[in-house]
Image 1: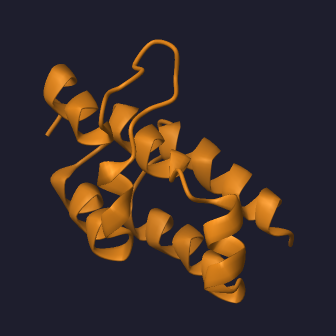
Image 2: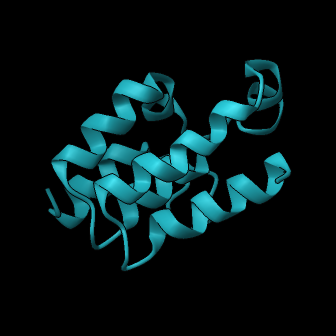
Length: 98
């Protein structure tokens, strides 16, 4: 599977109503097959983290897991037109989901 396909699947899953920690962990494991160089080049904005924070299914356990796995993800500002200049954790606070 190509990196683009893995990232697309992960991003789509993270915003879905199916989001659970165990499945997210399995999907994140798929990234292990790629080098950190590949990931940095294609994945520097962590869109999956933004999607998780927007998800109706977000939980504190999911956020903690992702912050442990990708600590820089919380420092990337949104590029979405509706939430421009917003950090992903702000999404949760705005929506009071955790």
